[in-house]
Image (cartoon, rainbow over all chains, first blue to last red; front, side, top):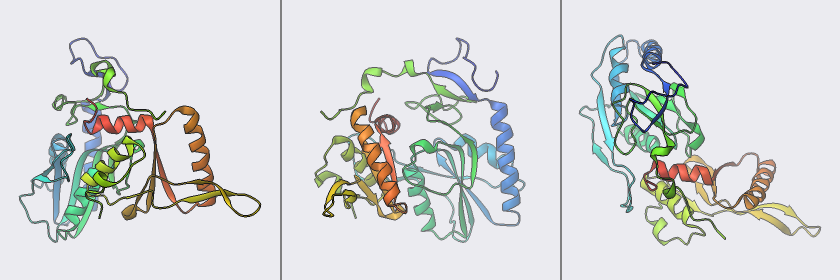
Length: 197
Length: 112
């Protein structure tokens, strides 16, 4: 499989349009990020927190590349859904106390910044020694609120992406690469919004 | 705090209410149309053109304007935003266009 831009052969899932980052490119970039993190956190008590479900694969691979591998911990928050039910909740919480630790929060993709902002607030309230964010993908076009991201794997455009943890309707997370979603797999009749007269 | 404000506030458009729900869901404090910015004045000093951004997010000191309207009206809105940025360069404002809004709905699963 090649890197960017090639239309996939027919044996790939219908929802996959083209590969944006293949396994090798992802692996290389994860290694580069780990090098940066190793330098920055040398001698520090590091806690790596992955955000489920999307960042599981990225967190797992990143931790493997760290000089002093630390067992990753994970958090999961509820998703916005209709009917609107109130506020986000922590569905799965950390196993460890992060007080006084240097926390690295690992996200698969940051776009609006809303969920990341929430998670940062939650973790800051637990008094870590420091808190930084590492995101595999940064899609700033949809950014609503700014949250500092220290480590970014790739800057991406506003195309809908799947694979390597990113899902579409709960599927395609296990793809080993990041790909764009085939727009034909989405019902276009549902993509209209009311327009003021 | 604005936890339930999305339910009781009177929004000019459904998209604004949906955006308010997003903010509330993620515990982002918001205010709806709290400030009107004057953009031009007549010879007597009366304001003849103004803009009232849809939201203000105090935590981020950020105004958010959402515009899902037709292109002709978007052009007018863009002119206002440009003028606002000229007159009030220290004020941060983010504009969400129709396509951005649709992507948000898609992302949050409101559009399937």
